[in-house]
Length: 380
Image (tube, rainbow, N blue to C red; front, side, top):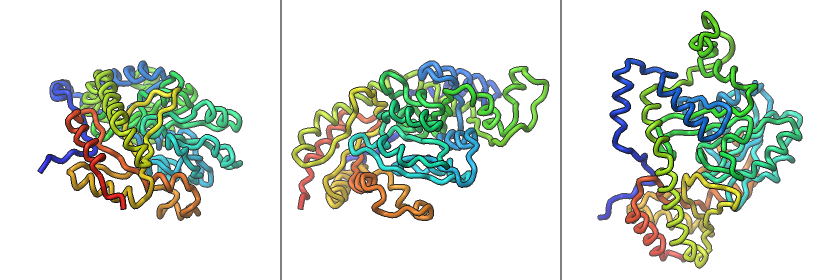
């Protein structure tokens, strides 16, 4: 039997233990040490953002955006339903109400044309997700935010180092977040970052990240002692995790070029087959540079999606679906949503086929995946 091909797995470069050993020998294992400072500068320089602060997860970075916005019970945040639960939890945990809008049928990003009609007197922010590494229509979204005096948050969990009209994703809006989870292009196992593009948030973000204290100012010698100043939590990752992340970032060109090579291979090999069998392929608008986070197809029917996934899994290929709509979940129903409210989201979620896609996927494995897709014959 052929070896199983996983959906994704982290890529290691071989010198991770050397750098982690440096951390252990230094005796400085907690957060905000020299490796973290170096990583902050690497991310800031590559994204051209105002400030980058590493966090223990993208979830925690999103929670920080909610605190920075001083969300109160009853406030509303507009966001897509087709996203990971953390995008919503960050705001609902503070009592805000999620206002879900539908997605575009081509990029599967939030439908920018549906945002403005969702704005009410209670709206406090717009949170967008750059799905699969492809940027949302940020010019239109930022214009809506400006018109209604609403900050925009970019969830770039999929899209770190992708671009929209030449601008790095996560650095276009007032606040952005990044993920360095096990499944992401660049990984420290667990980890994330808050990206700050409005200087008005910088000082308070440091305080929230340091358990609500001005400890960062104390370390810089700006105050003679630090104290409790604001709400906050412990959002600093260990230097051990950051050491691994630095190696990933130093190999940026290799990771991105390898992922693009795999993406282009899938497109070249499957486009004609997809057209013949009415499967939808992913779309990258001309003004976007993808981060190439994952590869998806949409089956023409729910039943075909299920049969295709079963077939691929039977070939030891770990293909899968993706997000289940947040509005049509147990929690979504508590907010008054129901099936049928967001038809594009529901249709996409029920027909999604994700193929294995990761930096270390060999061309031999990719060819095996393509051959298995083309060999599927359970059409009836």
